[in-house]
Length: 101
Image 1: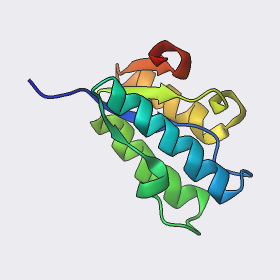
Image 2 (image 1 turned 90 degrees about the vertical axis):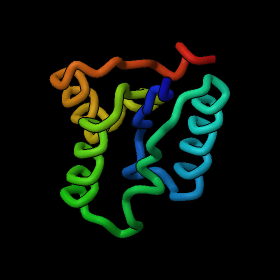
Image 3 (image 1 turned 180 degrees about the horizontal axis):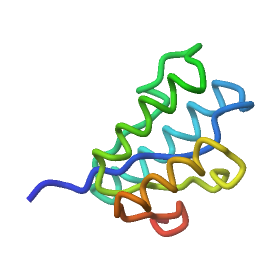
Image 4 (image 1 turned 180 degrees about the vertical axis):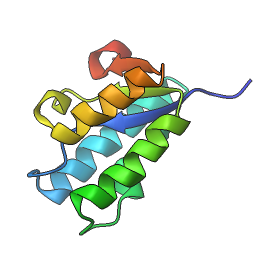
């Protein structure tokens, strides 16, 4: 049986790149500890991509994943809100970071 694939969603815009990389890396570790596969948008979206380019890549991956992991700061991110709406529309399971701790 294959592992559930989870898209990590959190605030990136306006966050220093190093802090965002660390935050998403912690989420990766949490998902691996719970035996989930993951898609990390910090690895998916090239540095310097426009919001439009980033969302095109991310929404495509959200649709391919089984679930969405909302990081604690996702509520402050317009992109995360769009990813959450897309996941809900596509019938994906949605986790909050605290659900996996």
